[in-house]
Each structure stands twice: as structure tokens, then as C-alpha cells.
Image 1: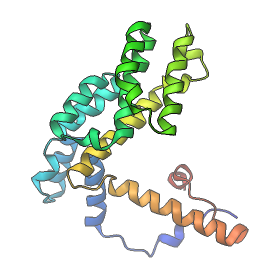
Image 2 (image 1 turned 90 degrees about the vertical axis):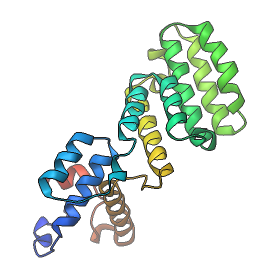
Image 3 (image 1 turned 30 degrees about the horizontal axis):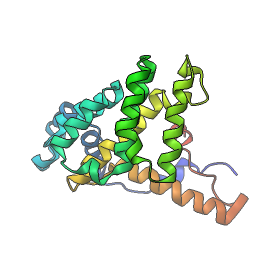
Length: 216
């Protein structure tokens, strides 16, 4: 079955303010401060200044993780949201794991081993963390870690994922939605279409694809 014809939406009215709020939510969530401020000015929207509090710090933390400077990201997070990482052990472990990986890639294997013993081993009380720790330690056996079976631990996609998770955690800690309105809409559309596809089979719509939707 072909995807839904976009013309079926022609008679559906969408409030302009709703669209503006969705765009603004995305800009704030992803720390596009100047763009968000310009957007408010250009649209005449009125939003609480609370949305902009600590955005510069969030942005710095996000980019520190992307750049691999996770120690600085951890320090800034502790200043911005005390106890956040203590209460989110999985995220804390992932951040420390990134630092370990950077040490391995820099061929500082002795320092990496000492760091793992001091900082990572205490987290190894759950099966999930034990498995992650084993993968981290396995990197030490390879002269070229990027060519090892654990190469995915070194890639930018992992840093991006952890940076996103940390950003969401910081936002939620400030009592704001962890996901932007745009992300929640896509999540909802994905779940609904997947449900319809499973329930109706070939007579229902295919699973939601953002890429296909943007091309329609």
C-alpha cells in the first residue's frame, strides 16, 4: 500500500501559534539561543525568560561532549545541575566511558587503565555496565582500536547520542520537557503508524518514515 496522499491533510487547519511554539521549542531545546531570540522578535511571540536560563552552559556542555572533553562536561554539569549524574548512573558511566575511549585513542593506555580501575570499575555492579566495561577494556588489546570489533565506541554517533541524552537530562532536571515538541510529534506519529500497520497489515498505512514524509 502506498503512503497516505498528502492531499488528505488539505482540509486540516493547523494553528499558526502551535507551529511557532513547535519551532521555538526545537530551537530552545537544541541551544540555538540567538536564532530563538530572533524568532521571538520576528514573530512577536511572548515567552518566559526562563527558557533562556543556562542555555549557554547547556550548549557548552553539549559541545564538550561532542569534542570528547567529557571531564569538562561533567564538571560543568555538576555546577549547573548538582547531583544529576549521581542520580543518573548510566549517563555518568557513559560520559566516563567516553573519556576512557579518548585516552585509548591517544595511545595513553597506562593512563586509560588507571582511569578505568579508579572511575569505571565502581560502576560494574549491573550486568549492563559489566558488559560495557568489558568492551571498553577490550579496546586496550588493539594497536588500532578504530579497526577493532568495538569500533562503534569511538565514532561520532556515540558522542552525539550521549550528548543528546545529557542535554535531555539537564532540561528535565530544570522541570522542562526532556524532548522538544517536534520530537514528541514525530515519536507519536511513529508509534501510531506502527500500531496501525501491525493491526491492519497490508490494508493499513506503512510504518512512519520521516524521510518519506518530507519527500511527499
